Image 1 (spheres, one colour):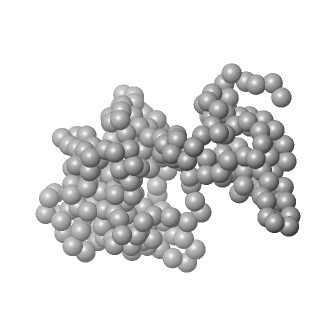
Image 2 (cartoon, helix red, strand yellow; image 1 turned 135 degrees about the vertical axis):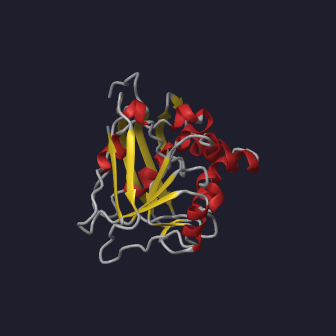
Length: 267
């Protein structure tokens, strides 16, 4: 297989053998793989075919028995544990089927945890994203109930983590038969009201509310330009500058609390 100069991930002849006293288990036998930046690759196959073993090697959680692994042009198959951990912290992200959040931490604390391993001071980590938006007029959106103590219900944050926003929108997507409760009427909601932060709850799956998620999902993420040092958090935080996503247009929000109606639009 000829090597592409644009390869982000490249495996050549990768083998993985698990040894016991009585048997050798060949989990991978001569795997070749070439992935370029921007490509999406799915690895499929029946149970026991080596998918998890391959992903563990790609994520630097394990090393191959034989073969070469090049990541971003650098051979990584022989790195020690510390160096592999450093690269995982800065260059590799894992997305799990379940939340895998640390229940005793807020969502902000979960996001900042990788920065802890970089040796960054706690005060600097905590203030970067929120303070970067101080003085800006911005709308904050996220899933489920904000301020909850249970990350399964929504976003576990302290009020001080989001108090610079102008509008908070909670998106209550249905999960099977379950629809998360929102913050309306809670102490967290009262804090929003007292500080003049507008609140809106959306139930996109209930028929009465409409959310055009494409604009939010596909607009360019401005996090790197807003907080260059935190560009690696783009997997968790999506910052949209309306002037860049929709040049020449502005975002408008009209709300009627008594009628419980609201309309957010570009003009």
